[in-house]
Length: 388
Image (cartoon, rainbow, N blue to C red; front, side, top):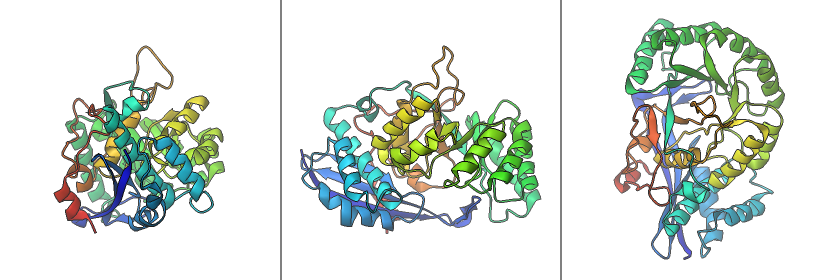
């Protein structure tokens, strides 16, 4: 079996009246780059990369540089292909669009390898520790009228109550756009709305310097925050260490890191308690398994970041399936010593409509796919609707 063709699909969905802000910028649209790798036997593997920004750079890396090198290759050797592509592009592509492109290619190759073997990807990766995984709702972004705090607080009450009503026991909320005291008020209202038993995590999207992150960490600690994600910019390793040393909340990060080399320094440098590689950005499933080994070696928990289409969510489900407990206990508890999966709740048809298979939340959990490969089928009409 050989690779016959590689096709990229640049996707864009305007968010319209559902636009929102993180600490960094407005989100007027959702983007991604999907890749379909077809073999001469008829198997097609799907992968995703570049969901953080426009898909054009990632598609160009695949179409013009990496993809042509794969024609005629055996698609059931994803690890070998990853290493060869990385060695080829090391001088100009150790991070950014090239690794996004390699992530998409790698995910698609694992999809083909699993289909060819008649096995789900999680079994190809060594076997799963769970058949369902607890999901946490990512939401509570900032609306366009984010400066109208009374209106924002009222909307937060309805939004978070809806997540709890849908069955979520864990919520991740955004901070970092407003002054510390106003964001603290948002956290207070959310905690009062959902009660003491629902877990809250916060994500600053690297919106603070270390001093303000430490201050915010101490201010929000009484609200039983389970982790503090991306408190400072990803380049600020000393800032991460300062926040981790001085804040009584577990520190999480890593969605902006690339490959085992970036994560070696991030994890080994004592920056985080929880590392968050994104399968569609860190280098794919091949890189993920290496990062997971690093994290286990250093006693750091692994909870993948997920932000993309249904392809990215499906790949992350396979990845989460193979994460061992951190550490093993007789009574595993989500997030405390068992992985959870991020389930973004903002408007995104690329996540909710693209696949034939729906993501169904049952008792707060998502099911790990059982079918060979990734176990997904892409709806061509949805792909066509959002392709540009």
